Length: 137
Image (spheres, rainbow, N blue to C red):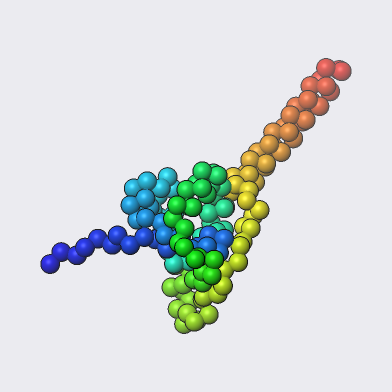
């Protein structure tokens, strides 16, 4: 007997609203790959979604998968991997969802970029001073 592939959508929440993301999109079209979404099935993906720095187009795309009446959504706020680790306290894993700001909506790459710019400024200043000292001798 052959088993039927699971075609049920991936149910997640984003800023307290419930979304059903089609498995076909997750498996075949999502630029970050399916492995970046599946851990959040049945849980809140707000912080992870914002930490990646998704575009406005990606946020707008979610709107087509909004589940009607999702303002009262209540599902786990932890990724699936965390839920498995905390199985004994499963009854405490669900809570009303609140909008989470994550890191204020900044892309995750902003900190390394700022460090790189800071290093470049320090090197520039050091080289400029070195040239000034050499040229005055």
